Length: 285
Image (cartoon, rainbow, N blue to C red; front, side, top):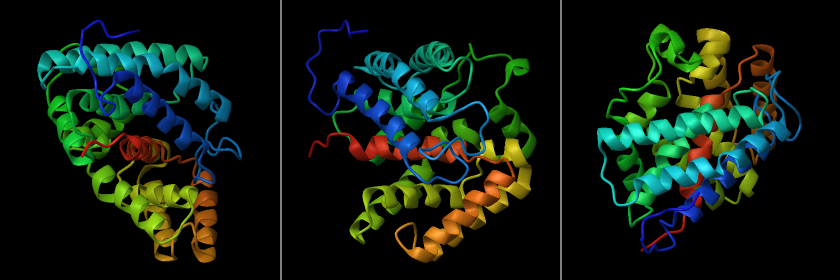
């Protein structure tokens, strides 16, 4: 779709650029290798219904959704009306995703996480990550009166109820602290220390896993799997991260352990995509 409003955009908040960057972030996250128990270029990890080709089809199918989310937010302020409009667009995006993947849930969480940030990016003349996360949080705190009934709760929502964790909605309402305080700092720190881009991105993912109450992990393996994910990610980082031989060995152990537990850290993967999205947005000083 195209925006119908006669608005002139700078490069930082042009909806087409925002949508392209969002899709690129999903593709970059999917292709990053080796990730613990997640789909990557080696295979399907702990998943039985997903592979890399499916993830890429899903990501590309969502460009029009991200574009529509950005367009809807232009000239708006956080409000319940905007919250509900974005939620409707997101649910339509889920339908497009499921059509592209033959029914597999590749990016439901990412539609919410990255989609909110797309809207925030279109609302703000600045692309400072803290500003955009605050804008996204202000939107997320409004209720969606048209949300699915309790009987239609997602796996993540049921985990939130069972384990009392924040989940994706809580992350958004809190302003994505694992992106701002874990993912982005680890990404920038690893780059500054000479890591390759893939190594820096893996360190960002591990920094998120180390502290996130990942609802995907909890859904698949409960508290035992969550502790294995968090402690294993800390072990990698304490061994120097993905750029160091000892860190790489610890990453391999983490991958094997989470795959054995059938516990894929999909929530952390969504937040890594958000981290990459914010990191690659054009900056306006």
